Length: 573
Image (tube, rainbow, N blue to C red; front, side, top):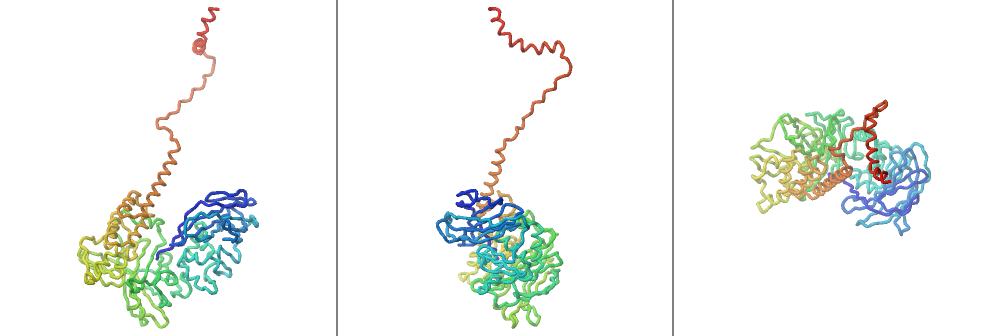
């Protein structure tokens, strides 16, 4: 599922401050109120397509102080307030953001009159109140007998997986179970207010959610109370409740997530959703596996490493089976040859047609799925057959090897293959691609099937070329996003951007170039010491004792030379 990403852009605006200053034109304004310093900043942020808002940030800059402030903001020339509330600042909750201050269709300059009135400030520890209200809070979240009011429309755009919490439009409230109120406030505050936490607090927040059995809401699925073991050849089952309520969407609450761990060594996330291609609905699965040991923080940026598979690499297969009420495996699927590493992302986007799965759903609307892992010792060799996950109904022959794929899924993502499998050519179910290389084509199809693949820069350029020739635009855009944060040399990324017309990547490289040039320019402003510069040796201290007669004559010689021009005048007189 594509996550929602919020883009922000600073703009120049005019503030009216009731404090030490008046009418300051700058991006960020600082004011002093009774020995406390405050900062306000206005931003233009893009919250998805067609959603642009002005957001106002208010921050307490004085450390060790708890203060309550009345915030009032309105557009110049208008009496109605865009924001009017009281809030207590302190500790890490010293920043408050109103992300939806004003919706706008263009980047018009707007003058906001911001008034901060300090109600009280004390050097006391900050404590959460029983009821906490955030800007434009219209939905109540309850935890530990305390309440937090939030802007639910903003949070649904910011974190779509939290949408299940805001389904009750009548009561406009949701009780968050098995979660501390402090954890709920900090987690949502990190999303809305960009609160910064110490490393130990971040680990505590992440661990508290990782140990939880459910992260998709109440009664959406069932699992064993104990953590499922993820050992090879040890399958476990997942009973999905309310299966018929799944719709053609990957966003919550139509997505089911299961989190299981293996004694703190492995972490696995499984999710199921429904997709529609060419009018046919398919049940789709996704799997993410991570190890808690030796996790590389820059793993996403190291996907394009100078490395190929070798004989020492280990591989495994994942199998997914639908289980009937009698315990029979009625629908079988297998994801082949997954490389063992710290981070694994694979998927089966066309596991089975929804109409083929519904007959095996129980009377109480439950479906049981079995997952398992087996070691893979084989290898795809020319002349063999490689089956991609899910329902297969067509073949691609390349380098004497048959790749079995789902025709509808491939045609949905590629106009090139849509033409090859069209009625114009007799709706054939098999095509030959003699000009393609098996390695390149198989990697391209694996990435299209939601698999995370590590590859060398050479293979990357070949996959991009294949995606460009076969019109797989989604694959091209996915690789472009990966290249944004990769550690590949900027010259190589520029070449790829120019060669395959990756406009966004080209802009990114240009900005990085300008940033490097600016750094060099700043360094050049500091005049460096010349390489051939040498300090003059210090003069020797005067020698002790009375100088000799010869030394006195040498010292008096310059004085005689200076007096010499006056001798003729003395004689003439």
